[in-house]
Length: 101
Image 1 (spheres, rainbow, N blue to C red):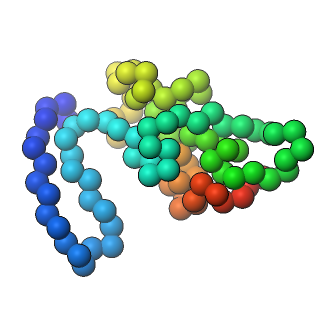
Image 2: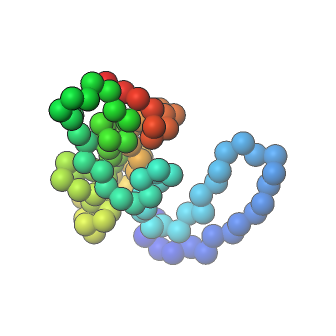
């Protein structure tokens, strides 16, 4: 979708999932990263375990290019338009303070 379509918003209290209004714009889908790229930190001296947001950062996000966020860099042509734009750990249901090795 490259053309803007005005979203229709309908409130429903009996649903268990959020619904995103599709406007055609690709944005960060992470509720924790909120558009800010985090470099994965494989190891911090003296730390065996760390929070997943520090240890893995944006790893697994379709917009992660290893040196930043393609969305923030404006590299929209390089993106998989059908990708999931949040880290793997968030896709797996972890919270940012989950401790990982």
